[in-house]
Image (cartoon, rainbow, N blue to C red; front, side):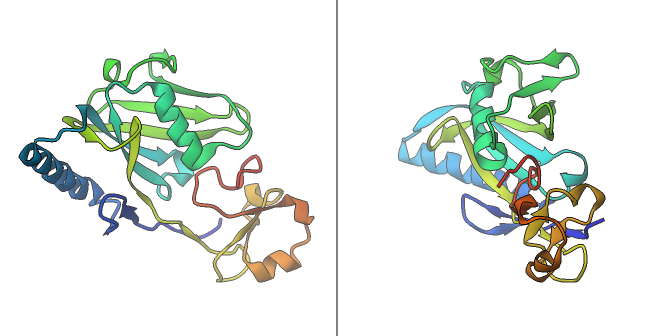
Length: 215
C-alpha cells in the first residue's frame, strides 16, 4: 500500500496552520471574535442561523482529506452539493445524493429543516466509480457569512503520498495500477512505468484523485 502521511491544514480565515485535532477550537475562537466585532460595528451583514460542518473522505481517505464549512440555515442541499463538486469532485457531471439512516434527501431541502448538532450525513458522488464523504454537524449558531450560501473555513493541505517504488513524493497516478497499490509514481518512476501515458493522471488534493479521470 502507498505510504500516506496525513498533513494538517490551513485556516481560510486567518491563513494560520491548524491541526486536524485542534481546528474546531481554532474556528470557535474566530466565531466568537467575529460576533463581537459585528455587534460593536452594528453591522450584521447576511446574518442568520449558521451551521458548522465537517466533511471528510470516507474510508481509507478519511485521514487525509477534510474540510470545515460554514453554511446558512436557509441554504439548500444543492448549495452544499455545488461546493463539494467545485472543490473536490466534479469530473463528468455524475449524479450525487445526501442520505442518512432513513434514506435519501431531495436536493431542494433547506439545511435548517434537517440539520442539528451531532447529525451525520453520508454523501455519494457518481454511483458507478463512487466517491463517498461523511458530513458531521459540529454546531449551530447565529452569525454572518461573507458571500454565497456555504464557505470553506479550513481544509487539509495536500497529502504527501510516497511513490510506490521509491522514497520520493508521488506526483502522478497510473489509473490502471492504482487499485493494487502500484500506481503512485514520482516523475522518475513514471517515465519507467510500463503502462501507456494515457493512463496517467495528476495527483491532486481531493478524495477523488485517481478516479474516473478526475484532475
